[in-house]
Length: 114
Image 1 (cartoon, rainbow, N blue to C red):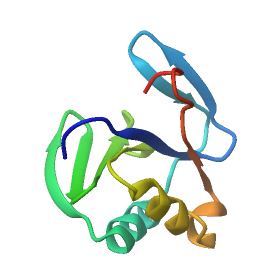
Image 2: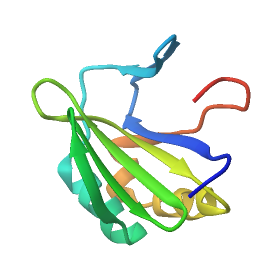
Image 3: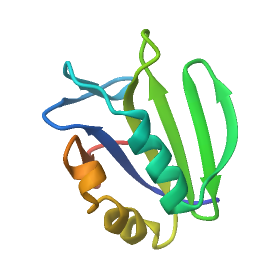
């Protein structure tokens, strides 16, 4: 996984999306269930890479998924680094009612930051 990538996020439905000097932040009372995390790992064929500072990372080929936990150890958002044509794969997986009932995919526009 080298070169340019497309960033994408899975965030709770209705979360405010804020770009600041540290990157994207998502604000809202809802959190993402562990079921969604597990569904994404299975559907995308990801393997555990590492865990550090409230972040779990998973990878496979052209996809790196980072699960971001809040201070209560709940999932605040899921960040993706997508290489090649993997955005198409992620978009298809996100069409599942398992995800769309509680979360949405957010893809920053080019030049909007990542």
